[in-house]
Image 1 (cartoon, rainbow, N blue to C red):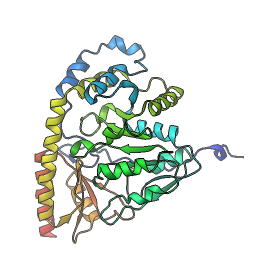
Image 2: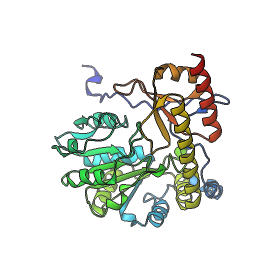
Image 3: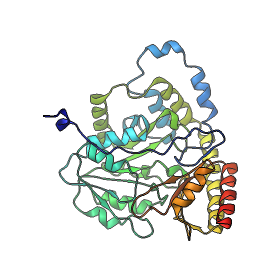
Image 4: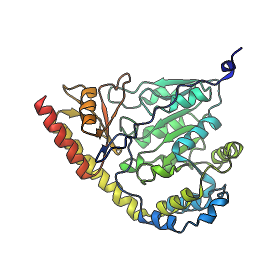
Length: 352
């Protein structure tokens, strides 16, 4: 008998390409185009090499305290992990253990079905409507838990807080996870609902609006009961999940409120300019509340545009998947980067 009989086989998540070319314009993985807050560099400069021989604080108290102070949430209602992917995976492992399927949208973050397969969690996808909006009634059927991004990825569509609350309130016997990786670009967080609903977990990240994708920091807000269960699972898996530099950088970053507001405002302004320019070129897209635009052209196939951009070392994201195989997900870069993108598209579409 082959040892492979007992191997847990899964189809892995495929992240966006990470090219390394001189003078490239990288608009394919929704990273922040600006550097982290200056306080991050200052915090890391204080790091002593001798500190590396010691384990980091397993409670991550330095980071928890900073998040608590900025978000006005008790530390026992906050969970931190190695990026929001780590937080979400731990939440799947901890909360989704029913024989009933968990529910999430058919067009959404493509890690959800991977985690479900990895942890042997049954799942069912609920189709977004023709405008890529959630159908709230779909989330009132029997289920073992619910997860969805808000705003959604890769569409950029924002659901109202009213609809989010309706879903949470309709499912008191399961955990509802609202994945808010992009909420800082114009969305309304469900954080205000955490104390009202014991079954709600709100997950956010430092990778987008806080410009620390390379540090891998994610966090979640929830009831003391939910956070307690998450910590029990975490400490049964790996007590030292967050390294010392990440804790220091994260705490400095989250306290840099003015800088955070400055760069998110710049990205939003650039996004709105890019929307207008793309529309002039014949692109349509759902109204985005994220740091990307999910665009399709009226006559030119998305894959063709993707390849043409790639030849110019301009990288955007193309998903060859049902319902979205004629869309491009374009991360918002600096003003200069977006101007280069638009100028190339003008020439390419005019000369085609």
